[in-house]
Length: 458
Ligand code: NAD
Ligand code: UGA
Image 1 (tube, protein in one colour):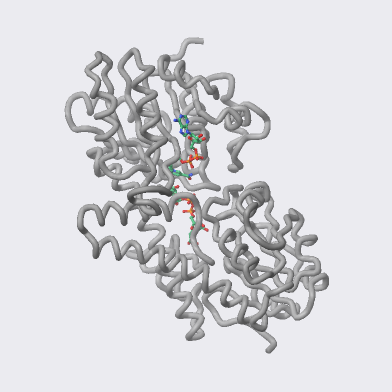
Image 2 (image 1 turned 30 degrees about the vertical axis):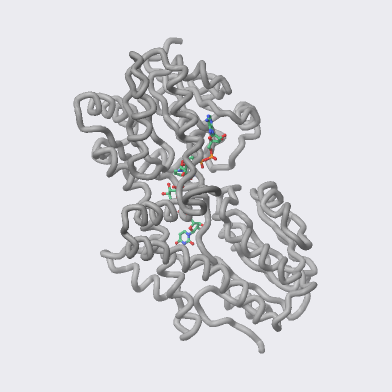
C-alpha cells in the first residue's frame, strides 16, 4: 500500500511510542516509523511485551503495528525516507559541568540534530516533541541550516502534554495541541502540515498555534503550574497536621471556587515523575541565566516544598513508631510515581525506601507494575529490601504499611485480613489519602493520613 505521508519519530520512549501509535491509528493513510538507538527497546515494541505499561496502549499497537506503524533501529534509513521527523528523545537534567543539577542535558537532542543533518537528502520538517529550554529551536535551526548544503529544514515546536497512566486518553482527547513555528511564509507552511495531521481527530478549536518560543516556554510553564498546585496543597497539609484541620476538606472548599478549580489539589507524599522536577529546574536555570533571581527563587520553592513533604513523611513514620525503625519490617504499597503506570522515575517511593533503609528498617516493596523498575532503582541502596507483588504476602509480618501509589487495588484490600497477619501495634501511613481511615482505625490500626490528625490508640 502506498501512503500519502511518511512520518518518522526519533525516540521510542514513553512519548514517542504512544504518540505515534495514536497518529498511526487516526491516520491510516500515513506510514509512521519509530526509531531508537536502544535496540532492546525496539525489540520490545515489536514483541508482545511492550517496554512500557499504559492502559489502552496494547490494543492500539495491535491495531496498527505492521500495518502503518513500524519500529526500527535504522535511524539513517528512517531519516532519508521520511519528510516529517518528530524528535522525542530524552532531555534529562544535566549531571555534569556548567548547570549540573539544573540545566537540561541536550546531548541526545543535539546528537539527533546532527544525525538528521547527516542523512537528509530532501527537505524535512523537524518537530520538537521533547520538552526543551526556550530557544532550543534556534540551536536546532543553526545546526541544520548552517552547512550551506541544499537541503531545507523547518523546525516546529509541538510539546506533548499527555500524562502517564492516562496517555492514550490524553492523546485521543487532548485539552489542546500546541504548534509553534516561525511566523514567516515557510514557517507557516510547515505549521499547516503539522496541524493537518492533528485535524484527523482533534477539533480545530483545540489546536492552537503560536510563535515558536512561546510554544517551548508554554510547556515548561504548564508543568511548573501543575507542580506548583501540588506543592501549594502539600504545604497546607503540613499546616493541617499542626492545626487539626483536614487537607481534603480544605482542598474541596478551595477547589470549588471556579476561579481556582479542583484539579491537582490532592495532597500526597510528594510529586514524582520524570518531568516536573527536571522541567522546573530547567525553568529556574533559565531565569537565573536571564538575571531573574527572584523569579527563579519563587519556582525553586516548589521543589523545596516537595523535598520537605517527602522528608516530613519519613519523620512522621519514625516519630510514630517510637523513634526507631531499626529491624522493623515496613511494607511500601506501590512504587510507581502514580497509579496506572510502571514508571518509577523520580518516584517519592525511591526516596522514602532509601530513607527507611538508612534507618535500618527492612523494606518490602509491592506494586502491580513497577517491581522490575523498583529493583533497578534500589540496586545500589544499602540495607535490606525485598519485592513481593501480592500485597497480602508483602504485608505479612510487617510492623507498618506505607501507601506510596494510589493504585485502585489498594483501596479494595481486605484490611481486616491484613491487620491479622501484621505485627501489633500495626501502623498505616497513607501517603496518598486513598484509604478509609476511620475504618482502618476501627479494625485496630494506628492511622497516619496526609494533612489531618492521626487516628491512634496512644
Ligand atoms: P524516554 O527516556 O522514555 O525515551 C527517550 C528515547 O529516546 C529513549 O528510548 C532513548 O534511547 C532515545 N534516544 C536518545 N537519543 C537518541 C538518538 N540520538 N537517536 C535515537 N533515539 C535516541 O523519554 P520520554 O519519557 O519519552 O520523554 C521524551 C521527552 O518528552 C522528554 O523531553 C520529556 O521531557 C518529554 N515528555 C515526557 C512525557 C512523559 O510523560 N514521559 C510527557 C510529555 C513530555
Ligand atoms: C505531567 C503532566 O501532568 C503532563 O501534562 C506532562 O505532559 C507530563 O508531566 C510531562 O511533561 O512529562 P505525569 O508526570 O505523567 O504528567 O503525571 P501527573 O499526573 O502530572 O502526576 C505527577 C505527579 O504528581 C505524580 O507523582 C502524582 O501522583 C502527583 N500528583 C498529581 C499529586 O501528588 N497530587 C495531585 O493532585 C496530582
